[in-house]
Amino acid sequence: MLRRATDQDFDPLEAMVSAQFGWDPDAESHEREQLRFEADRDYLILDRENTIVGNAGAYSAALTVPGAVLPAALVTGVAVEPAHRRQGLLRRLMAHQLTEIATAGQEPIAVLWASEGRIYQRFGYGLATRRAAMAIESREVVLQSPAVDEGRVRTCSPETVRAELEGLYARVLPDRPGWFTRSERWWTGRLMDPKSVREGASARRVIVYERAGDTGGTVVDGYAMWRMKPGHSQGGPNGEVRVIELVAATTQAYVALWRHLLTMDLTRKVFADFLAVDEPLVHLVDEPRRLRMTVADGLWLRVVDLPAALAGRWYAAPVDVVIEVSDAMLPQNAGRWRLRSDVDGVGTCEPAAGADPDLVCDIADLGAVYLGGTPLGRLADAGRVRELKPYAIRRIGAAFGWHRDPAGFEMF
Image 1 (cartoon, rainbow, N blue to C red):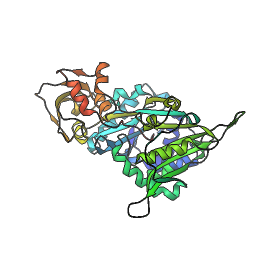
Image 2 (image 1 turned 90 degrees about the horizontal axis):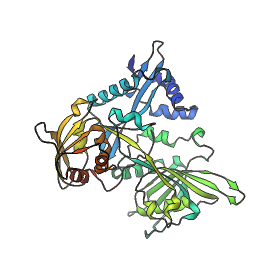
Image 3 (image 1 turned 30 degrees about the vertical axis):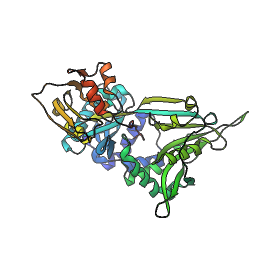
Image 4 (image 1 turned 180 degrees about the vertical axis):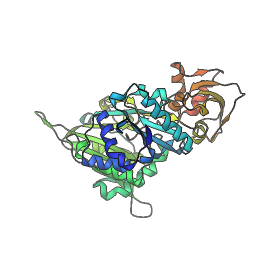
């Protein structure tokens, strides 16, 4: 039986999902996850004994896309109990969830973190962002920045500067494709610090970068959350700094925060995950090889309402093309669509049933290019999209590009 969840389902649901992912939730992490739980957005499958054997949930938020911030479903908690796999339960859950999102008509896109990429491509999700990670040899790099530092870095308790963290995050978010809005409940959960997630490191610490305001007082232009894991060897201290998140509104703040993290006493490495591929730090250090940067897949995006999604973002170049799209799960997206954008980047998307297409692609390919992080030409080289008119790839690809790479900032 497939049904919508209730608040009373949370405990057995958490037990089923955490078992599939190998988690052992404790009281603190249980409280944090319950804060975020949206029962009316969660769909369960139960067996004959009324036991939960499958789940697909979502969080309500808005996602930054090129030039705009759009409502989006943050898909989460997708799992099927092992004894019930290979019975079509996952497809049933995903199809039901997508249909419900489309029918509600509020969210033109959905995004998720994939435990395995092969799972979600068959449901129309495309790889929209890549995630960079760094294992920095902090004593082997020196920051080289011409930025004039007019502020200071200060260590704070997360709770005492929560309002400043929330305000800065909201201020920076509109220019960072892939970031999503955080509700008050989400912030509460984000600042909780269960011991089970520390992996032997310290409690979470926060530093803020502040400067004098134009009309008095101080203005916070950046913050970083981090932990320290102490360590020693025969050669002396070799502790680690583990960066949780770093948000900066200015170059000065960005440089000052990284300088602080890279020069912590008793440490020799700085680990940072969930970074952008175009992270400015690569161009600020004297030896970028010592950043030990690696890249993996990030957010996967599904276009749910094609005309609303394409009209909802901005475009980097004017374009007037017809795209023929296939969509096996949401047939209302299939067909030919005319996409136009003006010199200001504002786009429109309308049905174009009788027009000759410039390009043919699947809905997953639109998801991949949607945030501007996957070049259309790369998909063409892989044989995923087909050009029907000369230079279509070049023209459409230029329009879908963006000046900043998208980045999935936080796993959900």
